[in-house]
Amino acid sequence: MKKNKVITTEDILLKLCQSVSSILTEATSTNISYSAMVQKITKTSLKPDFGCFVLFDGGFSGLVVINFESKAALEVYTNYMRNMGMPEEELAVLHTSDEVADVLGELMNQIVGGFTNQVRKDLQTHITQNQPKMLSLNKQVNLSVDTNLDRPQARRVTFSTEQSNIFYLELAMDKTEFIQLGDFEVAEEQSPDDILEQARSKMSNNKSSEKSSSNAASDDLLDDLGI
Image 1 (cartoon, helix red, strand yellow):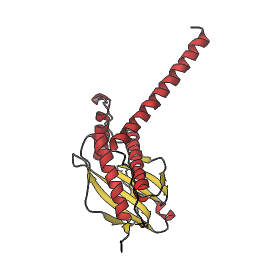
Image 2 (cartoon, one colour):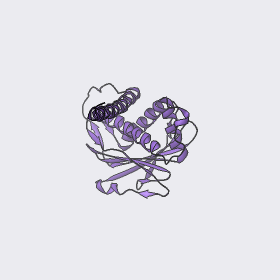
Image 3 (cartoon, helix red, strand yellow):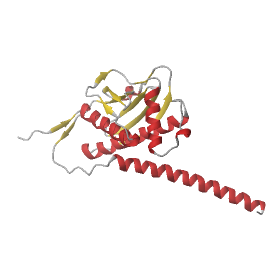
Image 4 (cartoon, one colour):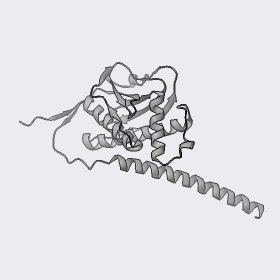
């Protein structure tokens, strides 16, 4: 008799870790790795120096938190902006800068987006995410989102940057199992390159729209002045 394949919380966590590692490695052109050991925790929390979190809901509900130490946040930000062609003199030097928050928020959005796409393909279910939130912190903040889960489970995984700076991924989600009853064809996986290219195009289009709006406003003003 054929044994049905079972997908557990740890399997779902692994998909998330793979999304974090692949997206950040591609975005920064550096090696971002994660520990082979996972830690069971009782609650998720935002910790200094920089915390990002995003909620997801649908086939199952949960919360993703990434806590960066200041050096890790700056390293990821700096390498990403260099990879995008930003001149060295224009880079932020403090992890509390708005530019760092914007970049980490965008990367968090891409990470969870890649994760939700993989869940849809591999688990044949659908989850949606909200807009990531980023906070610069000097003390720990516990998140009580777990109370919205029926049977919450929480896990923490340690990540390392190429310069050996540390950040932590925390996942809280419903205790659930997916049992594969029959065979199905898994759609082709979207590569990190494609995800990042979509993000770059979106950012470029937003800038072009802002520039066009600015030019149109300037033209209207010149017309009003008879110039």
